Image (cartoon, rainbow over all chains, first blue to last red; front, side, top):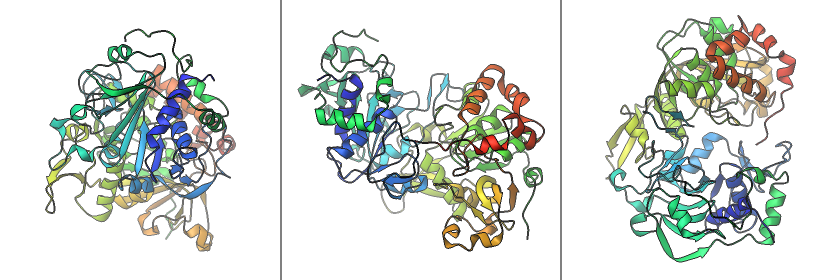
Length: 268
Length: 290
């Protein structure tokens, strides 16, 4: 059975929701949304999901080829202001793709370089990251594992709280911060190393540990149970194909690489 | 009492240096005809509060803005708003960058007459480091620290609704009214542009009355402007205009604000609508699918 790297990453990312129970799963971007939808249709049928607009759905919409929203399986109205009521209850797990992630699990989607008054590159702004990070579980999706994303120092603009002792607010403990997993094109990581150090949990087929270490700007712990990332099952691939009939997943990673890598990538 | 006014009449309350909140979200249901009327005016040094799209981008590009209170400025399908991006990278504007939910809390604090609302949002992040005006305070009830999200008191709110009557009863028929009710309630004075004007008895239907999210005494002016949200959407009447947004991004990139303004702004809304293909073509824009 052949599968693409995008499909492997989607299946790995869907597993972050397996044990969540009845929470709102939010995947931002096509592959993260596909991953959350896959989880809702397979491993965790209690998940909740919106139409990315203003309704909660009892069945996820396809991520491609949807002609219109009318006729979808609505569950309840869920306008943006009500999303925050849910966020602040903690019953949500977001899977998002930050531009930078640092060794503390802090992330950046706001701006890069320059000064804060005049950044070299203005990105999105902090959006909902500060609130998400202090209220509910978050996982990260990284299409290209590199030192540009996994930066050596702190993020240029720290948009989400992580496990940085210097920034821990008074009266808080790290138990109140819930960073789950990081799915990249090379591996799966978490922040369950010593003192919440980032830790490699599994390597994608054909990827070496050195490749991961060489493309990360900070030191990583390695799980004593370091495994190969589970490959997609036939059922998962069938559900993915149904959720993405236009095969938009093939356009998310450069050159749509196969799921089992043959060549070793250069350090970058 | 009729609150019907032209955009120019309604906007005459806005003075230099005022704080103006703009409803909608990114490329969705923005009061763009009102924004264009502001672009044609002499007003400057505004502080904008918005879930921003081209409204914020254009006003920044035109030099009308001193400060933006924002969580994002985006056109959704085009994640980075081109004019806002340029203004930021040139250091042309001051910013107060907050979380999307903090912005909502700031509007609620203003609406409720509170100086601030305590929240955990922003703790541990650069939101509080980069905005020293947002204070972190002790709680009288626990040993934690809290962000005191200050009230975002608005001098004027600009929002776009689907329909209104002349007394200021406004219907938002779109699937989401976003935070428009909070913008209106946070403001001393609210100006609502609408696609359609209706009689008072239109609201007698309980179903329609449920799509009214604030009371008429929160609305000071009603501006009738069919197609007035273009190039943003006014669901269910028309979608946003990706091809105009692409053209806008191109012109801003190549020739700056005047590149866009010379080609499109025109002397009035009728000229603008002709330059983008006319009202019928706006009404034919398909609704976005997410």
